Length: 104
Image (cartoon, rainbow, N blue to C red; front, side):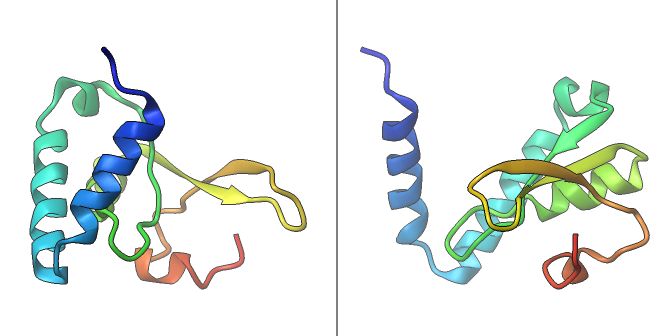
């Protein structure tokens, strides 16, 4: 029987919730490194990413590599006063650390 998206998310969340910050960072780097080696990444012109919350795997290395490689990178954002979302195209000139503080 195939797992549902909700079941997979729950399993991933439980797995990462038990890791300390060093383990989580190491695992995030491994995931990113593995993804950056795939043909899917290499052939993509646009990367949809996200800003990780505490206890989530961070795609920061993918985001940085994609910007460096000249790919367009988009992050989801919630539209103010709604529950709707859209995507924001990152500007290569804004450091990732500033994204969360920027008015996007």
